[in-house]
Image (tube, rainbow, N blue to C red; front, side):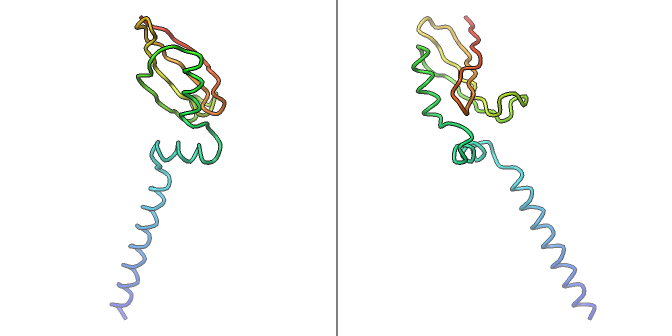
Length: 109
């Protein structure tokens, strides 16, 4: 009976740890997985759609792209895109990922 009780306790502890590990895994989706889910759920546009708008409105070459979710709670998903324009100036363009609206442009030299 004591062996059975110990066995049941071990199984219970093992299952609790597996459940906790799965919860942690579910809560810690990496950024890439979050972005894919947001695209699939229709929350944000694809990167191709965003870049199409950028290339239509800005001349230059994209050097960096980052996607942030819940940016200060103001816009939801936001792309920060850095380009080098034809005059070798760097521009940081902030874009609403859901609508492709340019929110801000910061130029540097």
